Image (cartoon, rainbow, N blue to C red; front, side):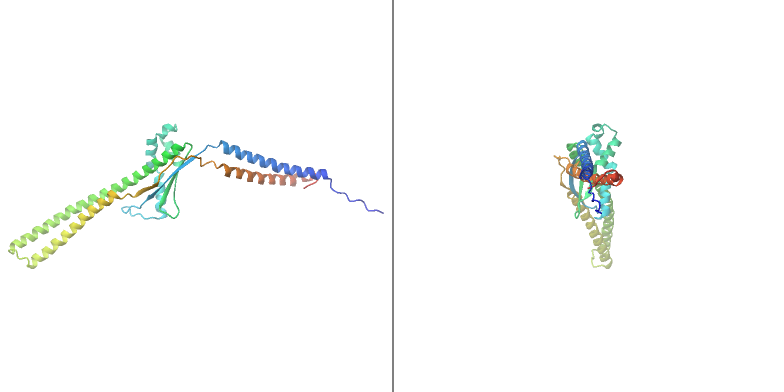
Length: 283
């Protein structure tokens, strides 16, 4: 008795199954890719302007360069007292058609700052749909921050200088008293400078006089240093950006293509697992 012939899967059914799964992958890929392209196209273009500056710790505030130092400066940059003058000088509330408080909140969201790794430099970045405004805001934020820091430093310098000047006046009184005491003793001793009492008072007078000179020297040095040394130095000015920094067209399209291919394969696998028995043949 002859064995029954071995049947082979129909070629047409197998071909249709492969075409179905390939079609699912292609359609899903195209949908995701086109969606990413459309979203990228309609997203508002934002321009980024930045500047770089160096801030030196204030010796009067006993500051040192630490991670906390930079974190503190970043908070000062985005504080209301720093951003409010920016809003007022650029008239942002009127330009953006909102209240001053809302303009400050928006400004805080588009301003960022960071420490450049391995340096004592700080970078301020501003992202905005208008490249000119991005440049202007970056400049005004820096100027407002610098003014706050310098005003604080000047206030502390003036307070310490007043205390030093008061101490100098008090020391001048002490020196004058020692001078009178020495002169009186010289008069009583008929100008005998070798008298032990006169020698002791003369030594006290010279000691107090030397201290007075040191205080006067410190006052002059502090004035000179304060006049010529700034704790903030700008290294790179902001510029008007020519090209938008976001959206990143290339990155968005690559992500859209990658996700489209991934979801397409997952959809094809889902269809095969759930409806595989109804689809005769497979790849």
